Image (cartoon, rainbow over all chains, first blue to last red; front, side):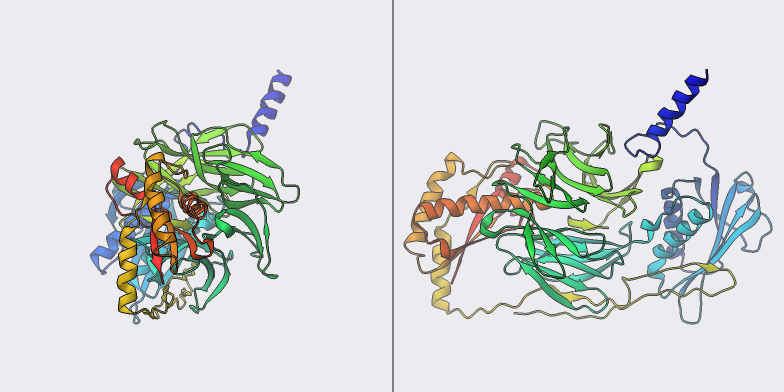
Length: 415
Length: 168
């Protein structure tokens, strides 16, 4: 019996923390949480948008069974509304305007009818309501002692086609609800955050010779970094922001190069007569990239110093996009043999240290997978039944959430 | 024409932090200007030159490709030969930009590379036919320059192409 338990312990430890292992079922262990609006007077449309955003964010943190019913109550009421009397937690909030017309929110979290957390938030316009909703969910997650959802506060940058050869680069929150166009006009694509602080971004300008530009989003200052005939894309930025993996195509041959931000020198990493693109740092000496060297797009890795190439993915008929975080690679795979069929592109997760493959999506065309910096979540775009949505996958909670999108086709996205 | 729109809009960089209930909370919104993404170009071309370029442009046929392929199809060989003939003779003093394009079924960067490889294949064929390599440039627009936006196989086939742009 002792040996049996030792084996059980060793097996469970060997799988602990492996994101490729799917959580099949979490028996109803999550505590219940209801939301009560105690706003006295505010624009009704904004009130409801804020409530829906808050419920969505509380669902995304994946630590509660969230009740989505809208209830009104007095902020100072000593008891929760009668419908919520059996809830373990109740989040009560009120929205109010101050003299500067700012959007203020005061909230308190009740546990078994007793206040356990209270905070105040303020934004200078009510159009930023979703950032306060994200911040409340973040703070409740912190209070509950769960692993940080810092990614909830990060900004997404994406480019979208407005007309052929015309694009806009837009900064948004992680649900793409708030959108601010930061580069308008022209043909500018593949935006990429230039640093972890998200104060600067790279993008490719195609108005003349393909040129990588860097934009300081606070000052609006833009500077040209490097140009190449045919193609010039920044695919990844090192953790310290000092090195870039770029795809360039001098002489029409797309290959991956390592660009040193300080010395402004680039070094060729891959050398194949077909297509090598989308380089991403797996570690300081290893690049993961997309190549058609087997006759179809697939994911490979290459050591920068030795040039040794290794095939990383053995499942999927066309694996043309991926995102890397630590030992994990999430990739987009075409699974049916019909190149144009419906229901053909799904996201899968592998670990470079095990042989497991975890399928993350089940329907539609799922693309642009992007890991959060901490690897806890994956952001992606889902196209299904003529509807595009932004999706977020909570790997450790085995949950997917979708937020419907209104705008046109997204060209590229970074988080 | 440089069409600069420079607007100062407060937002975009929002840093929120919650404070305890007794303290007011301040958001750190910053100025995020909208910058124009267009580069200026110098178009000093006479009307007669424009007419000549347009006439040559009309003689050049688009080259179409199969799904996820960048080799020249046999049914495109005659079009390419005719294009090469025009470029070597009537357009010998002009520059040619080859624009590679793809359907929507690729994936961001890979699609751009595929479009470029298509342009490269066409360029190699032109040079093999005697065109001046120094006058041929290439660019890829990936799936961002679709001529057809319907969700049909015929439509996608029209987007897998290399266009010729005649430049002074």
